[in-house]
Every structure is written in structure tokens, then in C-alpha cells.
Length: 475
Image (cartoon, rainbow, N blue to C red; front, side):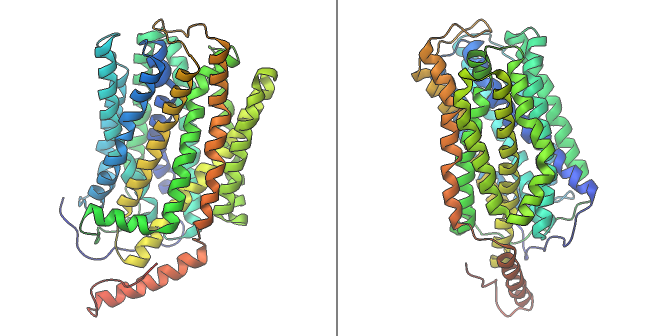
């Protein structure tokens, strides 16, 4: 891997082929599985199988993923500066994805049984897995800005990706608890579940690697000379900064919902066996159906307005679930389906706006540093997804939730039931709704992007002619 030289090559214009759409989207099997299952099952695994106190379990879930805040920008810089016969990003889809699968299965291997050694093992295994995930996810998320410079095509590409992501969440989130049960619950069941999810990750990694082999990607180009300088450039990009903060906080809200599924199903719905699976089907199933609708909404309202609408649906739906104890189960599941509709739009438009931010930066600076932007993005997203279970675990601790090492939840007090309910409803609503106010600072419309791209290319042409050393666009 050598330091790059030259200016960034422009992405392809016009629509991408269906095989590229589908191939790129398959990578979301890996990101969806890893983003869902630890948030769903790791906290209950620690509290109800290994007997770890809820507060300590929350830290064990939070800290290894918080490590990604440091490692993701580094992974992005490395991928920005990678030269290989497979391009800058694709090697990481293959090798990072395979390492992720192997290490994920290791999290639930439980070679030490219960006790302090088992707790330390889970923490270290989760840390290693989070590192492998960084080197898969950051290059993967960087690719759309280099695949096309078409504003609408990025939304279509993200629609494919989020459809597969929804499928990955549905399969991993709904089936993984069933695998635990079929495997005998406790440690044996979780070992089988770890292997099942590892297979999903392998399929996603190989699908993305081979599916994008014909995709147009920009050549390696100039980046800022140091990671610190790159981070400073990304931080100065006002639309990106507003979108990132909003998405991180909302990710924490979504993660509290994921973390609370098992607890909510068992303690509120009184259905430990089929409840988690039904909740996941209701949450993710609608997402597969409403993707075309969200695409049309985005075309009509614009990405920012559509993101606001989706976030409000998600927040209001979560808040309405506070009435779950007095509602019939069918009404609860219908409300969860409303959450799924909002979640689908929130993911589609946030991820479609990210490549716009990257394209804007490339156009105005003439430098290719998509990896650093996506490194910051995925670091924030991963931190938010880890923060959600951490907060939820803290709520359980404060409400007096009793841990168990039997593989089944212990009997809980009314106060603990209240903590389970509020952590699943009011808390995520507060984390998802208010951050949309930050999007007032996001101003990347098609016209703004077109103007930036035009002027940026003019500056790059001047650079190629030798009349000055780099682009002169300013924000």
C-alpha cells in the first residue's frame, strides 16, 4: 500500500446496473447482522446466561464498540490510501468480512463457562470483532460516493441497500433467538447462534466483493497529508457535521429499541418464546414493503424533508408504545409495524445524504477522502448502536432488574417492569425526535451539489494544466 498521488477520478455518471445494485446491497447482510444481533442478544446473554450484573453488562456492551470511535477513521484513511488490483475498497470487503465472521462466532463460544474469566473473554472477543467490523464497514460505506455522481441514483442505490439491510435485520434478529432456543438455550444455544450469524456475514462479504467487481470506482487520489488534517476538513463540512450528529443520536435511540426487544417481550408482553420473533417481524417486515414508497416520497419532498418525516413516525410510534401494558397484543404489534415504516425511511435517507456530503467535499477540494468521512460516520453510528444498549442496561440497573445465570430471566419487581417499558418506549422517542432540529444546517440540494461539482471540476482541470497546485473551492 503506497501513498497516492494525483487528483480523484470522477465517479460514473448515470444509472448503475442492476447487478451492481444487488452486489453492493449484499454487503448489508454483514452490516445488518453485526449491527442487530449484539444489540439484541449480547446484553441478555450477559445478564441472563452468564449472570453478569446489568450495570457491568452495559459497560461490556458499550466499551468495545466505543473503541470504533478511534479505529474507524484510521480504517478510512488506510482504505483511502490503498492500492491493489481489486481497487481501494474491495480487499477490505473480502478479508475484513471473513475476519468479522470468524470473530463474531468467537464472542459466544464461552470457553471459560461463567465467572470473571468468561466476562473478560467476551469483552476481548467483542473488541476484536468490532475492529474487524471497522475494516469491513468503513470501505463499504465509502463506495457509493465513488460509484456514481448522480443525486437520484444514490437514493436508488441506498434503497437497494436498505432493503437488504431490512432483510438482514429480519433474518438475523428474528431467527437468531430461535436458533438459541433450538440449540438448547444457555451457552450451547448461543454457540449455535454465533455460527448461524457468522454464515450470514460470510454470505454478505462474499456477495459484496464479487458483486462489485465490475463497478466503476474512482482511482486513488490526493488526500490530506495527515489524519488530523483530514478530520479537520470533515469537521468543517457543515452539512456533514449536522447529519452525522443527528444520525448518531438517532442510532442510539434505535439501539435502545433493539436492546429492549427480549426484555419487552418477556416482561411486558409475557411471551418469552415467540414474542421477540414477532416483534422483529413486525418491525422489519414493513420496511421491505415501503421502500418504493419512501423512494417516491424522497423524490417529491427532497431527502432532508423525507428524513424528518421518517424520524417523526419512528419517534411518535415509540412513544405510543408506552401504553403497551393496557393494549391488546395485536395493537402492540401494529404499533411496532409503524416503527418499522419510520425506521426504513430514516435509514434510507440518512445513508443517501452521506454520499452527497462526500461528493460535495470532493468537488470543492479536489481531494479524495471518502474513507475518512465514512470512518467518522461509521464510528459515530457504531458508538450510537453501542450507546443504546449501554443506556438501556443502565435503566435496568437503576430500576432494580435482577440478573440470572440460568438461561432464563428471573422474576422482576414492578419497578423493574417500569424500567423495561420506559427504556423501550419513551427513551428512544426522546433520542430520535429532537435531533431532527439539527438538520436545519443541512443545505445540500441537487442545485448546490451540481454547482459545487461543476466548479470543482473546473479547478481540477486548471490543476492538470499546471497553472496552480490544487483546487480553490471554499465552502
